Image (cartoon, rainbow, N blue to C red; front, side):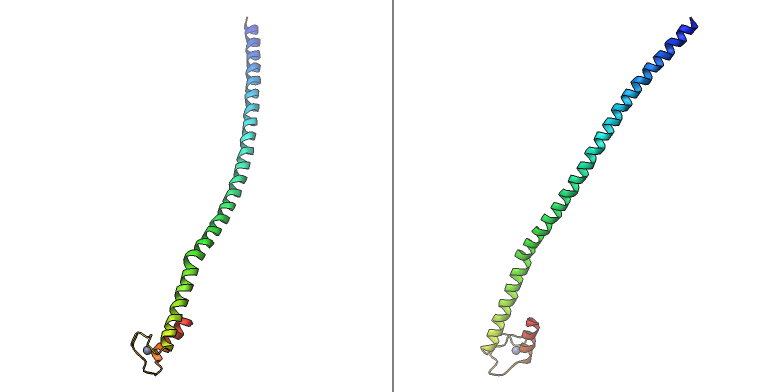
Length: 119
Ligand SMILES: [Zn+2]
């Protein structure tokens, strides 16, 4: 009786080992699948980040061009041109006498102011 019982136990144990091995193989297959998927997701993520950076740069450039450069250059340029014209027409553009007639005399304040704007 004892021997039969022992043989039963060994066979049972062998079945358990087979079952565990099968589960283990499934697990390895699952891990391999996940690793592959993780790798391709990382790659895709990297590509998407690169594209996003490119789009960000392009958007930033467009915004800078539209918002900063164009208006500033036009505003300052036109402003200085207007002031230079006003000065040439015989009026002060300096803080000291702004808008009043130069009475045909050059004004150092005006000239220094215009020089600063052009520089
Ligand atoms: Zn002046």
